[in-house]
Length: 141
Image 1 (cartoon, one colour):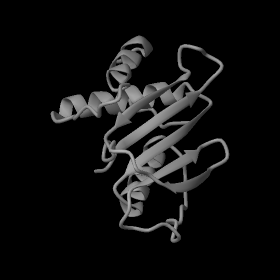
Image 2 (tube, one colour; image 1 turned 135 degrees about the vertical axis):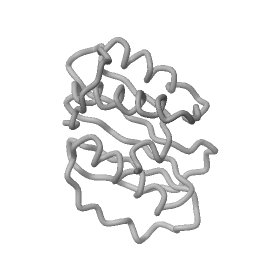
Image 3 (tube, rainbow, N blue to C red; image 1 turned 45 degrees about the horizontal axis):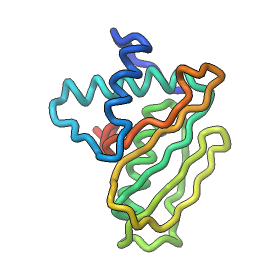
Image 4 (cartoon, rainbow, N blue to C red; image 1 turned 45 degrees about the vertical axis):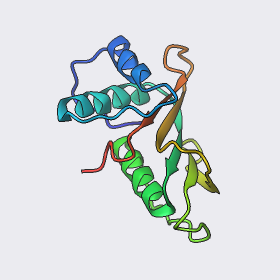
């Protein structure tokens, strides 16, 4: 459902870029060219999937919802999310968002990783998979 921007990447190149981030350690994206290439790869792959689950590991609820909203917007989803007011805003959180149901839940998170996991559902086995951890601010302008 993502809004695909023009890109020179083909699906194999996009998957190769995303798989670099599919490990336990968060990979930093410093150069703007690298960050833009990562954005394009993720947008291409998600445009070919039927739906996605987003898993966001953040320092607090505010940071998590900021990342969630920016990813949903970039992927082409309209949302009017209300931030979960029951979660402690000073504690790390895990937010899981299901784009097929357009619903989420928030839970405490004790892990050390921060970032976004994107799990793509598709009938095409090439697309199916979980990618990330991507930077929380990948789509924040």
